[in-house]
Image (tube, rainbow, N blue to C red):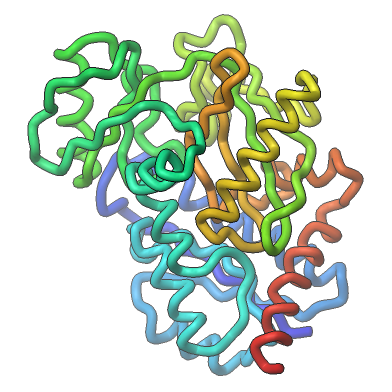
Length: 335
């Protein structure tokens, strides 16, 4: 079967943020190569199709290849993650089935404040928050300290570091100004949950299956127990060395089921498709949803593949399972 593996080429200079933010973008090519290799081992014909700074040649390559399905790893356009939904919409216009979530789901979950609005409206727990619009002043807050400040519409832990955790009004204003100035978008102020952190990988259509829970184990010498940008991407950093995933992890059975049910409900609510990851922090026995990642890293050493391995599924089997779900949609659409 002919499969197009589509991914973003890293921009030379990020359109916003810090120069080191390019590290996470550069990882997209490695991810795509891993998926393509797995597809070839499965007997498929996998073609890597990068999305660069213009879309015409990208469309031309897809039309020339005429793939049976697209394995979609694109997370934006020209370094702008807010345009992630438009790439999925492009596949829809080209009438080519693709893996992963549809445009509306990608758009909703890309906006952290809107995601939290919807979660709360449907009774799903997420930390208290306030969104400060671009270039607006920080309002009077009623959320208790400590707080965490982050961009409203980014992923990959962009901008997240020790300075993201704030304990007073002056620090809040300084960090919000940094997000506004450097990332050119709204800033999300959220109550910081200091408990254990888990990644819940969800599979299926509608989302029904949950892979073994993965816990982020923070070293005691870490300044702040968070998954910072350095902790996720900068392998030589103390943050990276002190942020260790443990899968499967040990957790009370009742609490495990609660986290799994919350993750499944959230993914169904937003219309997640094929695979997703829900990031959760515990406070007591309450699992608070931090984020719904509808396009998580699917490298062999990343969280989703690690959870699949813990469930007894090797990497090619995971890739084939995801591919099968997209092909099922193709059959239904043409029926």
